[in-house]
Length: 320
Ligand SMILES: [Cu+2]
Image (cartoon, rainbow, N blue to C red; front, side, top):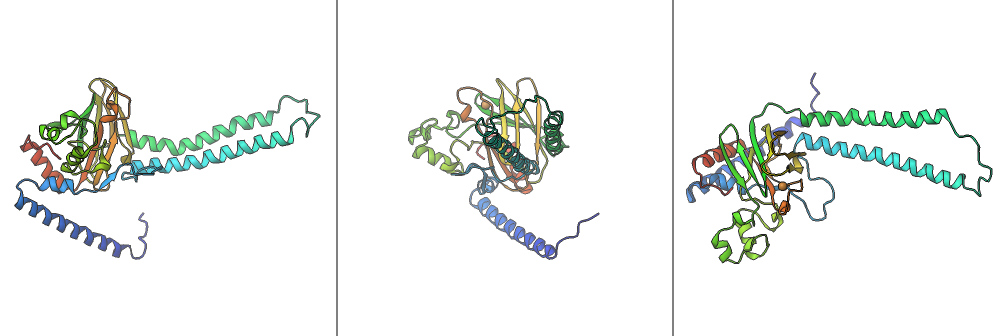
């Protein structure tokens, strides 16, 4: 049973493909140019040209724009619950107001003497149960969708350490660590010579961020290496902890999972748009808990394939 396509949808589809094609052409051109000017910089250039999408914005109060079905579901559920909560709050406040005005000692000097009202008591038990069952009918499917882990295209094991992340591409058989830019492990002697200090944002640190393709806006979010995944792929992350409990999350993907030492938990996502997405460790794990952010780069399949080859061939290829 197909839903009839709205008129004109085919046109916009074609237009969309054209735009995609020309975008790919430009990228291919840039890639070739980069390959000619600097051997081996293709994947890196493609990775650095990505749009910064999943990050906090000044004055932002809501959610980050969702890029997975899970995140869209979560945000929809949040709005849905807000409506129910608002209605209940207004009802309770109204009820209290009515009692205060109508039944105070002055307005109602002769109080009633009854102490029970069976119909009312049944109602205030049954109605909240009905509301909870109604909410559950919408929230449980969202929960199950997160927790039923699908067949993976890519499996990545992530381990939280004090205070950085370790990633292992399980099927490809390679692993790497990921530190916040500004953490001592990411700083070279040249950076210190230029005036950089650990965990301090100054001009030298701005230069260090720029060198990795970031700006001041990504300070405390950008990492030296990132998780790279192709757009549209089903990615399963196996989350654990190497010392204490950490928590891996990307808000724009609608995923968050505690990494508990000795246990292997799973989460999954299917990112729909290319870009750079950030998250932060979300379980208080010690002194530098605030300095172990997460960077995920969602790229085209071609860029991902290229990146895979480079990262496996060249162990010194660590900046991405
Ligand atoms: Cu942590």
